Image (cartoon, rainbow, N blue to C red; front, side, top):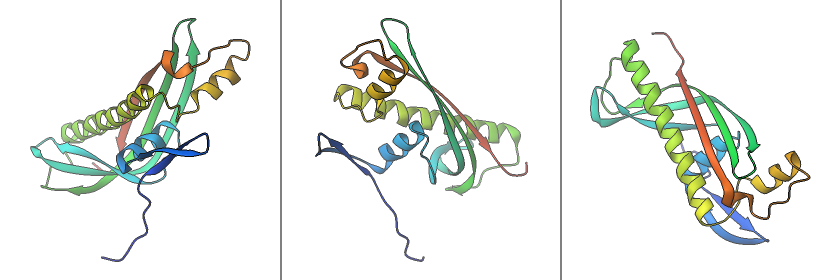
Length: 167
């Protein structure tokens, strides 16, 4: 093993002060939600061996965002599209089977949605707008005045994972 430099976690700064830190998993979710994901791995369960993990390396990830206000609720819509390759499996799986590949893709999609929803909900409860939702709302709806957009927002999330490679 060669030594590697890695950055784990992010600092959350509010009014010039450190108010929280994101774990590496929360950082991954933050980067997915903000279209800043560069490199990383998503773990899924192995469909043939439910107690074992299969890791998928994210090759490319793009997130599209839409913000819609219906007069009561701000709908923050995120579509995350990721292309992945197999990185690691605790136990060998039949990755040439289309059913197994589909199952791994669905598991990867659910994992991405889970970590993203958890991060959004945690910071919504903490009332810390790490997604710049207030600013985005004010840009899109300059005539509407809402003091705390985060409190009336809902995250609507879609995730699509596609395994690259021959099958």
